[in-house]
Length: 155
Image 1 (cartoon, rainbow, N blue to C red):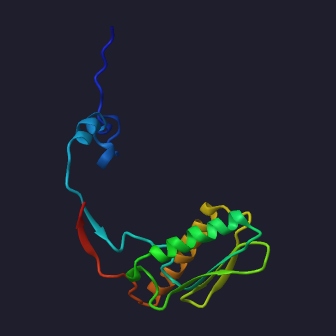
Image 2 (cartoon, rainbow, N blue to C red):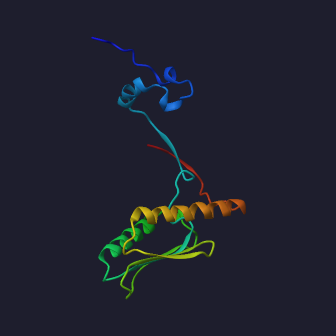
Image 3 (cartoon, rainbow, N blue to C red):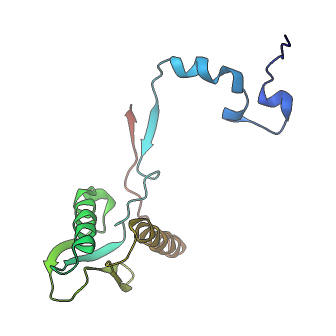
């Protein structure tokens, strides 16, 4: 039988730090219960942060798109007020087009409409995050402070 000494990540490479430092101790650490402090606010990037108007248009002819429309509407309504634009409005509505749609107007005045018939949720969420990132960069350059006051919570 051969026995090998298990090495720490630091012994393997000196450039590894943090959680990579001690691979052999990770199972011991996982068994311990710890209090974790999380700073809420700036760490959260809500999807509808800079949306002033969201129209969730469902169609009786597009069941898949309409289901996605309803899911997005519930996500928007569940977003806390402190993480929304001050005058944000979200409306669920029916329209007679063959495909469900999501119409969004942003705080910058930009408008876009997504056809949800063949859209993937992952693609749509990625696009919303991208708009948020671009708008946040623009507003930071203009010295807007959009961050709600952070609060500490114990988990």
